[in-house]
Length: 525
Image 1 (cartoon, helix red, strand yellow):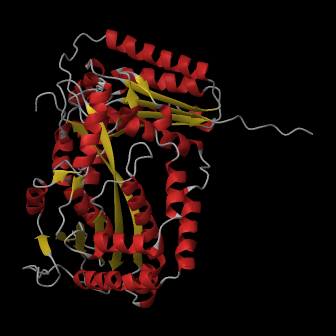
Image 2: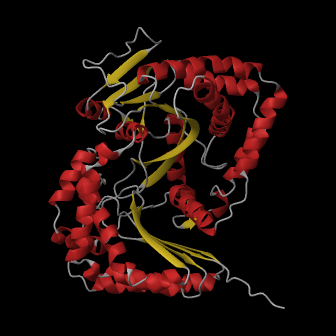
């Protein structure tokens, strides 16, 4: 619509082909580099194409520049690689429902409602079958002919700032030369926000998704329960409220406290299934604020959730959810009866886990790159400069400190509003039925009389997609939106998030990440 970016599943599939073909084409050529300890990957996500290189060699930058140069040319797109990737993708999609375990399908149906912007596996399969090599060549060309393309580069490790700047200049030179050789250029700029997406669940009603597994050998049924927080998660000290910080810390602590009792009760004592698990989940959703044309203020919102799931062959999924609900109801008493020492012990354990040193350079570089991409637009001042100290480098330390201050009352208040009170909670229950307890037809579903609050039952893909259209994107509440617009008016910053191909989904931008480790020290006598 206008200058706004919109998701397109067909071009997403084309991007998948490009990354697969490039990997196959360069596998043999980079084999020696792999033997020498140098690794690389080209990936595609909602944040764009990312070329990552890592290893213990001073030849790392040469490898990265070589790969970038190869990707700028379409000479790697060969019929043999195209055919093998098309066959692999098509076979994977055709066998998707028949080969997946019930709990994997439960996640798939939940995400189809909550985070997906495509029509699902069936739509992707149709697109994959219909693509030709010319489509991929044209798609690859569109990446480099779009005038809105831009590059982000993070060079991390044993490297000087001069070396990093020199590498970036060489990389931009390669890209500039490649673009100068292409005649057509896209003249239309479409502002957009690269990043993940999630929908906000309404409060006061539970979504229950019911689907039969198509895997003929699947005897297990699965139940996946997700509680989505209605208060946006914690970004950082300068970007979030105290409420967001304490809520995020509390949800993390609740997940830590609940993990072992949930497993012991449903797996060990009740022997409900051979996989019983619960965990804290953190997702993100990007939003573009409505401000003057061609001026984009992107904002990425963290989303806290608690997830529980059970994979069972001996208990019907609709009975499993009753057992889960009983546990959740009784668990409140367990929290209320905990001593201050017990709560503090869990808090200390979680705080230690949050502040545990990162041991892998790749993980550290990836974490820094993610924070820069998500939150840098919100700390831009004077039109170009970034207040680096406001980026949330110390989030783990801040959350760890907050966790240690939480009281029993804090935990109970969040437990009630997030889990127990149907008028305030946002919940999805995803059921997948195996062969042992197949889905009843017609479906015997829990009505609103069986539980407190409204239940929205969905048992077909068509019903799911119709309901999905009624859900709004997860974005900051009104108070946060006013704050972001106030920042915009104060700085009048012209932040333009372009795309490597503005109309190409999953392309977005180029991210070059390099992790250069120290050379192993030689032993001396």
